[in-house]
Length: 80
Image (cartoon, rainbow, N blue to C red):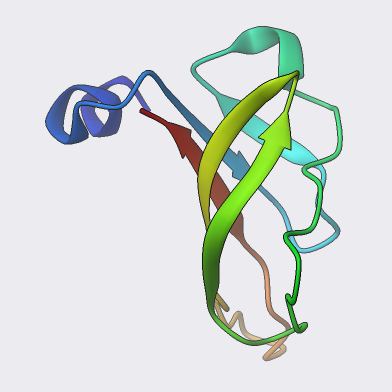
């Protein structure tokens, strides 16, 4: 997480599982919370845009990551 944050120059990096639960973040206060869905997101499809997390505007991307059972599982956000 910290390497991604340093390389990209963003303020924070957050990763959520397929259900939207935040599983890792450079901001430990949001781990376990729910990452809000961005406007116009479609399950299993890529998406990018803005959303609000913990009162801050975030640039976010939702990407399908296919596992063994071909279920999607990932979303992330970054604040710059």
